[in-house]
Image (cartoon, rainbow, N blue to C red; front, side, top):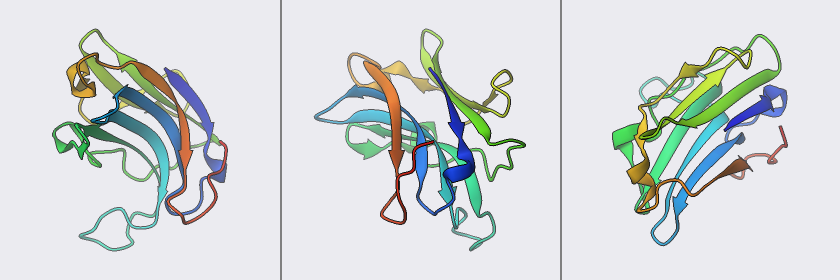
Length: 142
């Protein structure tokens, strides 16, 4: 699945929009692949990389799964040349691969591919869109 986002409205720490790939609930197995604004993304260097990022977080069996990226690695701070940004979650028959694009044609993978088994016994069962705001600003449609 590919989503085209207008990132110009994502300007407040904690605002995010993107894709969710879902496996099961009770215990939860899902991943969020998102455009997110962050005020301070490097805990070892306060305030040095403010801006918009693409990142994936994976929850397996109700826990953050850092084996396949967790909160990192991710894109690093981005400077898209237009208001458009595309994010993608693709299945290659074994893994879910996440990527982003500035033009909708050339995609850059980020974070390690995730085996479908990390989404629970049935693999990925649903995929959709989401927005969030971490109580620091409105969840703005993009």
